[in-house]
Length: 346
Ligand code: CP3
Image: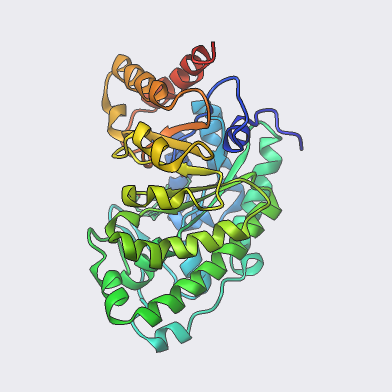
């Protein structure tokens, strides 16, 4: 199926575009009443993730309602631990919870490399349904967590400000940590390839907990594995979003990825200088800017667009959109990118 809007793919490859493409991390989710209606018709989040028809429906909602230039498949990064043998629960208002965690060699021995076609067949089916229903309107983004971020949840067992149990393993049992990271990496590569085979047009790796590691550990326990993923994925463009890894921007310029995501703490001009001209940058409006008035959202968006300039930029927030943001403010953001970025081309 020919894509009618391929702006994000062209921007990722560094081709010139008529305007800057725009989408939002976490666009499929709680900001939309239409999402909450579908979600409340089921017993929980995981049931929705495992229902390909409904997952496709909520994937497409932001394309219809917000006018974004890409859909991102509705799922979660935590499907990988589950497929490896470590199931998760999603506790209302608290977040992810793993009844079992990896503490020792014997815990590791119980895990397996995820088989994308069987263990994650529900995501693959959701991608196929979504592609059919999108009918080429916009590209579909596939995704996975970076091995380090997945490791954090598999060892810690839940969200945390410090992930100190996960970080402790890097000091006390680095060989065990490496084995687990290798298993996650192998599972993730197969999973992303299966997403691409099912129709994902571009994929993104989320390293949400990049910012908690010192630079050398970030190289050794995170970037090393992200590099393996980037080297293995040649079928479609790949984006790496490492939240908080301002210290690693120069090093990330060497990854075989097309796009690097910036969070809102990262200065745009400095990032361009550190990363160079050969990558597309994605981001990076402060998610809290959307709490402003329409005029303030418009102004902040224009300031961001001016700083990135017309080329090699995919507009987004610096992290996922917060659940209590008014969808009307998201529309102001999206429409400002669409209109103002054209004027930067003249
Ligand atoms: O729109 C999209 O971006 C697609 C769907 C998506 C979800 N999670 C759905 C979701 C994506 C890309 C993710 C990625 C994800 N999941 C990350 C990386 C991105 C980031 O935000 O840093 C992480 C760290 C997770 C793990 C996770 N999932 C947490 C910590 C939580 C609880 C906190 C929260 O945001 O609610 C989730 C739950 C989750 N994932 C929800 C959604 C829509 C909310 C659950 C619900 O609707 O009940």
